[in-house]
Structures are given as C-alpha cells and as structure tokens.
Image 1 (cartoon, rainbow, N blue to C red):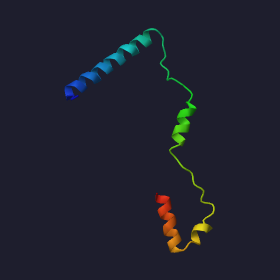
Image 2 (cartoon, rainbow, N blue to C red; image 1 turned 120 degrees about the vertical axis):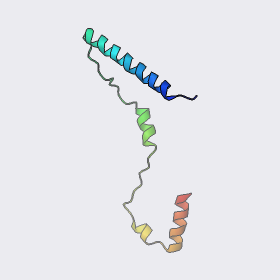
Image 3 (cartoon, rainbow, N blue to C red; image 1 turned 90 degrees about the vertical axis):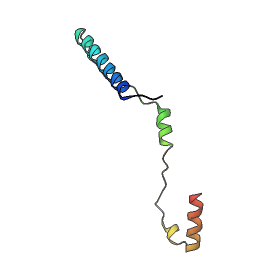
Image 4 (cartoon, helix red, strand yellow; image 1 turned 60 degrees about the vertical axis):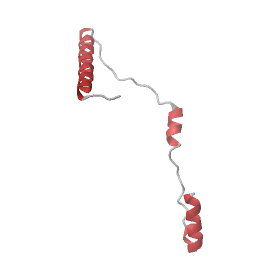
Length: 80
C-alpha cells in the first residue's frame, strides 16, 4: 500500500474530529475520562525477563589464574 500525504492528513483530521465529538459528548453527559488500569499479566513479565541473563561475577579469581591459552579457550567457548 502506498499512502500519500493527503491520505495521512485526512486520517489525522478524522481522528481529531472524532476526539472532539467524543470530548463534547463526555462533557455534556458528565463523563470524566479515565485511563484503563489493568494488572500486568505475569506471563508477559516472565517472557520479558527471559530476555535477560544474570551472571555472577563474585568469584573472579578463577579467571585471573588462567593461562593465556586457557583464557582464549574459555572465550571461544563462551562465544559459541
């Protein structure tokens, strides 16, 4: 689909017009707009947390005692 600038302007104008009509209706009928408040679905939280990995860096002594060859092998393993 190819949209022109006029198409976008028409859509934006239509949205603004509908918002104006809705605001007038709400004011006329004493309706106070409120945001929807919903609890976060825990399955979404679990999925988002799955994107991150936490690694312990408490014991660095093991890495500091490696020979250069062992360190290069460890780096290669971690990059796989």
